[in-house]
Length: 272
Image (tube, rainbow, N blue to C red; front, side, top):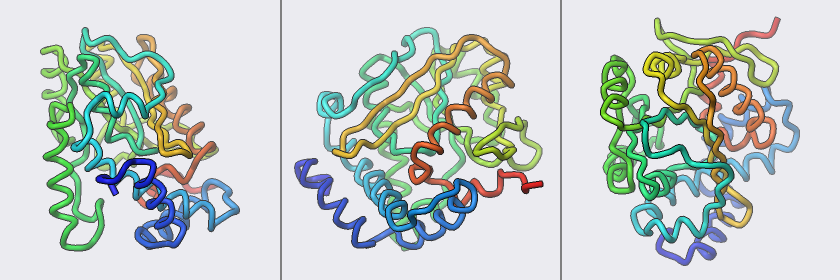
């Protein structure tokens, strides 16, 4: 699909999503959690949009390798301002939407950044044998599309501070359940208490690094929207509250675009 003109490739992906070809188990699992937490009603339409986003997210792995910055710039509507290339900043985003392409735009603006992430598991990309190959391709491609590469969580605090000290930025997703003895902050999502990891926010506060939050939306015609909001200097707790408010708004607008429903259920506190 990535080799086709994108208008044609996107139409094919929509047809696959409508016919429930691919990502059916993932859509079922995500729906079962999302319906219980987001008050959803239209299962058929929700699963179609979820499957389409998963297909597009896969296609983006190849589209980013096949097309240059100018191709992407024509297909991305930017709302807000990119952070300045200097000093180094911490940019927070979500497992909402499909944003693998954002590295192209960051590099074009001189922003050199690492991707702080949990070490991926094969099952994150599927259960077939090809999943291990795909996971490797995804990681290999990061440096070729503009990222400095991944920094995996777990003892990464010192490396994050060192990178910021060198003038290298950090992109991080904080919308996974907090685990073990990791620092966390209780926030509110969909009228429920949720514990999210706050280590990155604390590191940003310690380093006095500029902050920004952004989201990557798939539009109906296959183009994209990059929404960026700089955050004023604030405490880690305030950063997490602002982050959660934006995520809450996104989940209310398009809950099908949150690709980690199957994991996120562990973060929600039981209703009382």
